[in-house]
Image (tube, rainbow, N blue to C red; front, side, top):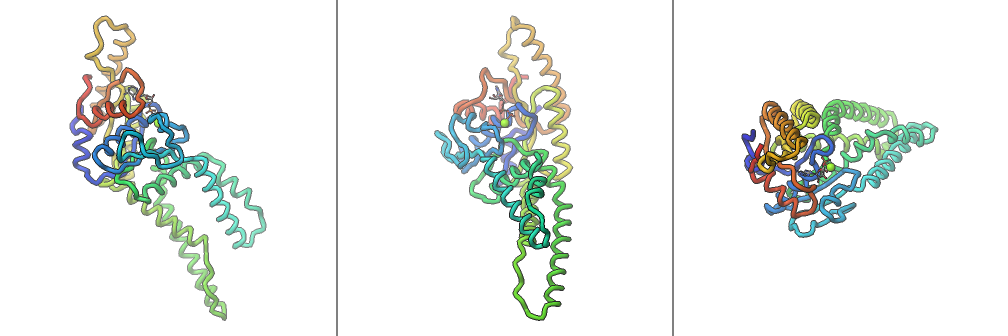
Length: 330
Ligand SMILES: Nc1ncnc2c1ncn2[C@@H]1O[C@H](COP(=O)(O)OP(=O)(O)O)[C@@H](O)[C@H]1O
Ligand SMILES: [Mg+2]
């Protein structure tokens, strides 16, 4: 089923810097992000494992509090982990939006309280998602590490944002143009050569346009970025990543490949195993066939371990499968 392993893929992409894991909930994205980050750190790259997930999944994975700041991971040189404080981010974004709306109302001489506008702009789930996305691209722009591994790719959001970015940038260009025209008219009409007023809205738009462009460049750069998709040998997780991969291809976002997780190792199951185990193995076999037929870029197949994956030692063991090229008996 594997034609090119994770390591072979990485050898072909030596400049890889931004790595994401996507897939349905519970398939092992957090575990695999941790595993990949650990491996890159072991290769001598200064690596940040970052999460925009409101649940404290990284702290729990590593058995160490990594909330709110870049924290060195105990026992792994070069590895840092960082769980973004989502509440703080959202509050900051709200404040920023309030300031802009207030400025604009004043500028347009509209005597309305900003509250209503702020409410309607921020009281929706898309706002939180966007705030998380902003957080992620801020980290990417900072460029302080050799490698960034993101837990829980904001998949739908990345796609939406990138899809919108062309429309967005057209709109911003139009806004910028008409504001420039208005400004030069004003200058023509005024006798005194007043100094140009600072225009925060214009600054904001120009800044937004630059950021969107930069984010799009990074996220679609196949030398720097790869999204890996995680599935189990089960119907729903397969359907989810099939859809994701389709979207990503459409938008030119580079897909690194597929990782199959939690496959029961047949060689460890005897004849006397209970039926529910045998049935599950038969079910997995069918879906593994489907995976082999559907995806041409499976990079690794990982076994279902005896326990959940927690702590650095267990991540090292998981890395042997994700990067060892060893295929689980299927
Ligand atoms: N190969 C595996 N074997 C056993 N348990 C696993 C394996 N991969 C993940 N797990 C466990 O499954 C649960 C879900 O994994 P997690 O990485 O949190 O999924 P996600 O981030 O996609 O929601 C966790 O308890 C994790 O320890
Ligand atoms: Mg997770």
